[in-house]
Amino acid sequence: MAVIVADVQTRAKKRYPDLDDGGTDTATLMQEVHDDILARVPIVLAEENLTALVVGTKTYAIDDSTLRVWVAYYIRSSSAQDDKKLTFTTERWLDLNRGRWRTAANGEPTYAYMTVNSSGARMLGFYKSPDTATSGSYPQVRLYVSRKQTLTTNLPTIIDEMDPYLHGIWWRYLMMWGRMEEADAFKKELYDPAVMKLTAKMQTFMAGNVPHIQPWIAQTAQPR
Image (cartoon, rainbow, N blue to C red; front, side, top):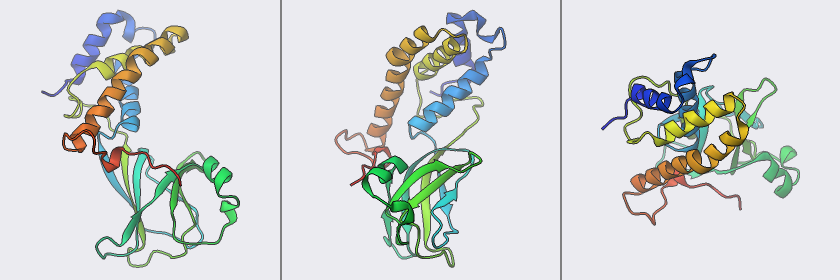
């Protein structure tokens, strides 16, 4: 049964009746919690394709609504399986483990990382910088991402309990009013475990209810 957004908000206000007082807005807090959950759990996925690779260009803009890139494939052509999964890492890891990677010769990308440009816009970077420009749609990079989603009537169908959202709303409410010690305890003891439980549920669901099989979307790629 779908969880109704209004029911979550009503339940949240039973604990803190002043949730909508003094400039606080339950709907806004719930939307913030929803964005946080979507960035941490692969619930609502979208496909995004970077189809304008330029030789020597290291970073590329991604959709402003993208909260997280879960996986990326470098696709060489339209032929089946002519692709490879990129390893996600960080600029810090590359600095420590790949020396002068920023000035390395162009090549076929192996690593991908998230960054921002000077204006604060989200960017996806590659190492190595592409040595082949996109022509006729290839090569391209296909991303599977979580994007911002405005809450309307119901939570996503896969979410069948209120706890992650209730704990999240109460946590953000405590932070808003400067009750930081309570907020930190609430997040650590209630909200984070509820999100972890939801993550485990998604992993089991996507692995076809065989817990020892790790679905590709839920894995964290480790640099080698």
